[in-house]
Amino acid sequence: MVSDIDGVWTDGSFYYSAEGDVMRRFTTKDSYGVSLARLAGIPLMILSSEENEMVRKRLNKLGVEHVSLGVRNKLEAIRSMCKEWKISLSEVVFLGDDMNDFHLLGKVGLFACPADAYPRIKENAGLVLEKKGGEGAFREFVEKLLDQENKLQETYEKYVRECLEKQE
Image (cartoon, rainbow, N blue to C red):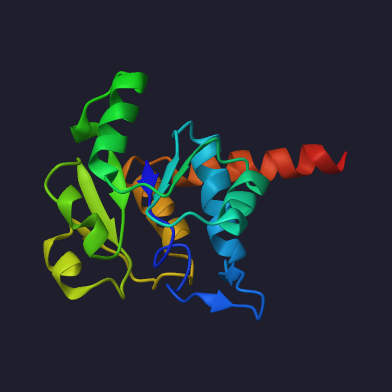
């Protein structure tokens, strides 16, 4: 599973401080998507053409191991990951939203996008989500994939068990 950040995990807006720091708003809804993917044994890679330390810190807090920021050629990065993980491009599911992801259409097994993705992306995506970027689109993506595999309920039950064990 590979996901873009800006416009997917965020609403695509950049917030600038007086000092020039760039900030983004994340929703905890997508955090649960990371937990579900982990519990289901789905490897996750984040690819973004933007380099931002705040994004790196957020993903680190969530325990996302495979993060590549400042990537200009996402297809090459995914091919490299496929070689390392010994999988084919057809086994990759990708969540993206804009023209910097367009070159991945038809190359990965499934290309999905948030409801507010760029129109040309939406027209060509294999799956258009109901959620907009920054409103839980990543979580919806994970849940839909798990549901297609009839693993969503089982994964949520596993999540609840782990939460209860931590409380004991």
